Image (cartoon, rainbow, N blue to C red; front, side, top):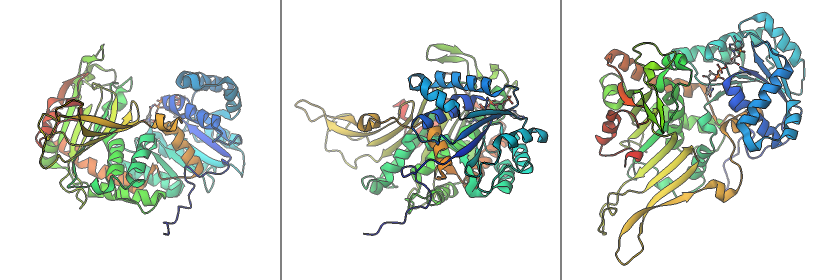
Length: 500
Ligand code: NAP
């Protein structure tokens, strides 16, 4: 039997010699660079997945030289990598690192970057914009003016990509004027998680689930991303953003797309992204009165997270007095397609929740008629739980006979523990995404039309909230959000997975 043609892009599993590269890391001294990006690059290097002919050039305003920057990067990698840090490997990796002081808004500063880059014709040039998005325009303008954007240069953009459809379009126009769409790598780091890859493997590498993956078999779906953390010193940023824009527009909708999309014809980036886009475009709009019925906004008050007493949102530094910004949101989403019509997708995310947890729960229909007695016989549907954090695993709940004479059923979990099965270290999301960008694989990055479609679904919800003018529902820190979030799902006869 013939197979679908493979993508001409490098796949993440079939890579040749790693290419020489110059990675310019704007925001090189920032939290994301120190906590995630440099440790991820170190690990890729230690795994011999980065070329020793690569360079990582940190860029920021701080007036520090290369050696201070390398020392700072080393301390961060030691801290965040723990036992995975190896001093010998580090000294080889440190040889790749450089630092250039640039104020992104000052044209004259780019000369120093240009001379550090020089002209290495063989090296792929990547610009990673790990700064606040209001600097993206200045960076793109000045990079182009300085003549350092090579014809095949790639740009990596961190979220948030705008704050609504119009502002995202402006950013995309500016970046798009500098390089082509196939050179733009818009990051949603959830897509780099091993379990999300496994969701693709589960759905499209097996025949088992496909006949079940639809209305008629699936009763409902829940996607929860809960954080125990509060605004962590970023109150000012968060207060202008809120949970809907910070989490739902990107991470939760991307998970929804992977879960709900039709099988792509192959694994090429655009084949996958075309299918995700169709899901976003098929989301039933939620606006006006509908928004008040199908969404819940919450804001945390002081409470206990674990055993720690934490202040309420309004007492966090940087948060404006009387702020109505939501720190929690729950939404009932519906996808108007033949596959999913009538299947509710409940999305829920928030700060200062009871658990640090990211999880997708697919609940199948109950048996039509139970031949067994007992509490677990009929109302305990099969359930597939895909856990993304804190640990990554997949479990399928089935009913089995409990040992003993009586025919009593109890739920048991078939668990897929990938660490046990493969004995291999899963890649951190940023390791995968940085590697994919260097190798030119766009599959796990968002295309412009996806970002646009996601904002177009989000914007009417925000507009309806603004027009409504009511306050978000309060919830004590350390709980699963306001009681109205339970009511949202209980109205349809279901309960959140953790509430059962
Ligand atoms: P951050 O800690 O505030 O770092 C900002 C970086 O930008 C610093 O290196 C800062 O260095 C540099 N910078 C600021 N103004 C500059 C200018 N005019 N010219 C050149 N460099 C400038 O922020 P972050 O937490 O790393 O986040 C960076 C971006 O990633 C943000 O858009 C954020 O929303 C996004 N993000 C962050 C995380 C995370 O976990 N931190 C997760 C997802 C997305 P100097 O002050 O020395 O210039």
